[in-house]
Structure formats: C-alpha cells, structure tokens
Length: 161
Image (cartoon, rainbow, N blue to C red; front, side, top):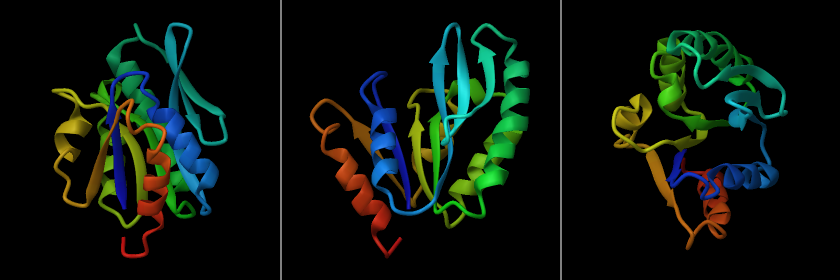
C-alpha cells in the first residue's frame, strides 16, 4: 500500500509518520528531512544525519547529494524494510534524477510506502504521483490530524494490499 500525506506546512505530517512508526510492527526504513540552522538535514530513521545542505547551495550540489546519499539509503534498506518512509518529497530534489528514479522504482514495487508529498505545481513527485492508481492520498488538516494515525495503520496492516 502506498500512502501519501499532504497538507499545509506545520500541520503535523512528520509527527504523524513518527506516530505510525512507533506502532507499526514490521521493519521500516527510509528518511526524514529536517530544518537545521539555514539548511536541511537528511536523516535515516535511526536519526543519523546522512547529509546536510544549505538552502542557498547550488541546486546541482543539492541534487548530487540526493543522488548519492539518498539513493544509497534506499539501497541499504530496500530488501529488509516492509515499510519505506520518505519525508518529504518536494522541490529540493528537482534536479536529482537518480533519486527521482529510485523513488519511482520504490513506488512501483510491492513495498508499503508512507511519504509526505509536497503538493504544488512543478514538483516532480506531485506531478507524477498525484494520480497514481495504487496510492491513497490523505490531506492532513486540523480536523483529522489527531485521528489519522489509526487510519494509516489500518491501511498498512490490511492484508489485501
């Protein structure tokens, strides 16, 4: 099952993923991106920083980091993980073609995926995944953010996949 979370900045999408991971009984792998100072840290689920970049860095330098370290992270966890987490997929990866291909390969595989999908024009991931037939897109808002974790776990644990 593939689940994409969308919603306004700061609504709690990453918090929801962390809550799901706390209750999901199977092995998970993937990444979180978090703001630090004037940049972004790319961390694995064990909270180890895989790479850092400044938001003012050249987009090609950012792409090189996603293409190298992001793809390496996927290769490292792919075989063993029952759930692959990607928080988040947005514009920073717009020139990272190897990373984009790795994401698309995972989405087209039989793996469970839980990802934050930034929903705006010209986002490679949004444009290519918003109508993906095997995906559930959940818009997180103030009304559902405290109840949605249970729904996500039910979807992930559904044996029908």
